[in-house]
Length: 151
Image (cartoon, rainbow, N blue to C red):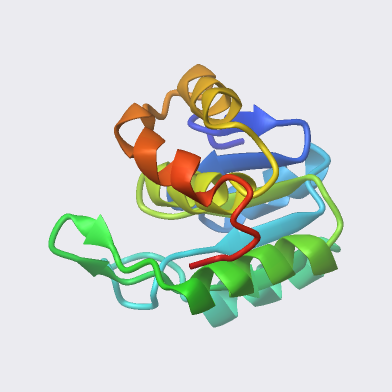
């Protein structure tokens, strides 16, 4: 299994890039859904979204590819992206494992969605315990709290 899986909570974990063996190991570890947040071709040598989907299906996993582009140092997070991510989590069984380059992009997107129903303190604490310091986005999480809107 990928040694860098970070468990945010009992329903959601994040990881750096997965390969075929990692997807198989995720299924064996009890994950039910794989969420791929990397655009195809983002870095050479990684399996494509289509290949990841095929491997996931072979192991009985639900799979969603929600490519998140990175512009400069920041992911391009749009309201449509957050809606797609929330829909994927709602429509698939858990626990879910989301992956990207380092896991941080996945943690950030989860945090922004979770802010509608979870306090900023709880989100920051869960992410910090999983190795992802999101304290810098506290004002955004607090603004989103109770907004009921993904934008």
